[in-house]
Amino acid sequence: MSSVRLSNVSIHIPVYDSSSLRLLRMPSFGRAKVGSRTVTHSGAAFVVHALTNLDLQLGDGDRVCLIGHNGAGKTTLLRLIAGIYPPTSGALEVDGKVMALLGNSLALNADATGYENIRLVASLYDWPKDKLPDYIRDIEDFTELGEYLSLPTRIYSAGMLTRLAFAIATMRPPDVLLMDEGIGAGDAHFQAKAQARSQDFVNRARIMVLASHSVELCKAICNKALLMAKGSRVFFGDIDEAFGRYAEMQ
Amino acid sequence: MAHVFDATTGAAMPKTGGARWLALRTVRNLRKGLSWAWLDTVCQYRRSKIGPLWETVNVLVMTLGMTVVSSAVIGGTVTSLIGYVGLGIIIWSAITALVLDGSMTFVRNREYILASNLSIDFYIGRTIFRAFITFSHHLVLYFVGVAVGLITLHWVALLAIPGILLLFANGYWVVTLFALVCARFRDVELIIRNLLQLAFFVTPVFWDYRQVAKERMFIVDYNVVFYFLEIVRAPLLGEVPPLKHYAVVLAVTLVGFLLAYVAYRGMRRRLAFFV
Image 1 (cartoon, each protein chain N blue to C red):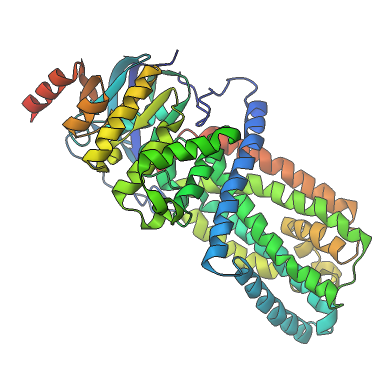
Image 2: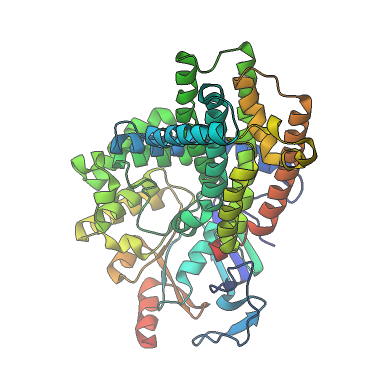
């Protein structure tokens, strides 16, 4: 049983400008104002209200895509669930192992080869050593990167990095998998394979949250959608309805 | 209130007994930092045949230069000084690596901190073990010194091992504390860089502290870096460091870890906001 529960969660992100990132600084006069969001001044920095009173309950088998305009709070929500950002108020409970893939790369050393990076991630995420050869074979099959896996990841294209990262992240599915739009970089063939792999993923009753602007990708690998605007929840449920409402907003 | 997650296991940090829990997790994660640092080193060797030994060449050149200057200005022969100065510079470069790479640890790993839920311990471990691996490469010079007869080998040299362990154990709190503070206040790194430069001249790295006039001895006595230097260097040169040196180092270790713990509790959660 894995679950993600957010009740009344808000996140205020302090924005540190170049002056507030210094220990020794001149006193500042004047205040910052930013965009349409509520921006308040607090101490050294100003603060962006990135999520406001968000409620959300996810359980086994939920594969949710986050949709909304740029700046709607999708990445912030993913970072919150990943434990990267702490909630400013409200409660967050996550049961289960989390894996966050919020860029398009899991290559932790760009000079190392694909294989070496796989082994490093395997070590960092405690993969059982005896099964590693099987995992690597599976990743070879999924990514179809061939001999590129023996070359430094520095030379990979964005799409190739995406394939590798997705393959690694879904290799030993965590209880909760979080992914950002970076994985949209894969081509159509990749997306078809990603869909098949996600099906396998849901058979094991895990939670997946994906932020993406790609309708096809969302429909391919998700079964629910969360539409967000200005850090709040607008709609949660059926994907088609969510995209319908999203279209109306534009 | 929400839990603080152990990024990779999903375990929530308990409200009580946090220190013990943190210590256990830290040790587990150190091993993983070593895997990462090891891969970095492998890649370094791939770029050039001698890998990190390029830095050792730097250390050698620095040693030769400093020894000549020191013997000319302060007195003594080059051959009698070179072991003392060389080891001084080797240990000093380890300290510099821990402090400077340490303070940039989180800023440099910004993209991973924001994009993955890898534990920040991995970045800390990576920095420490990279410094350690480079230091081990530099130690080759010590054995060269022994081989050509510039340094005599004593059993006492084995006492350097606890010294080295203490030095790098202190690296842990140094990296943690400085990485957090320097991520929040970007100018601190520049301040530290300046102070380190000064400290190189103030600390008896390339000059012999025994030649300091008694009434000026305070510049050595009150310099904590000196004690770290001596618990590694003195045994390698065949002298047993006085107990006082170990006492000072242990006291600094204790205070340092306390400071790092306070900084960690206070800043860990907000780290992603300011990197």
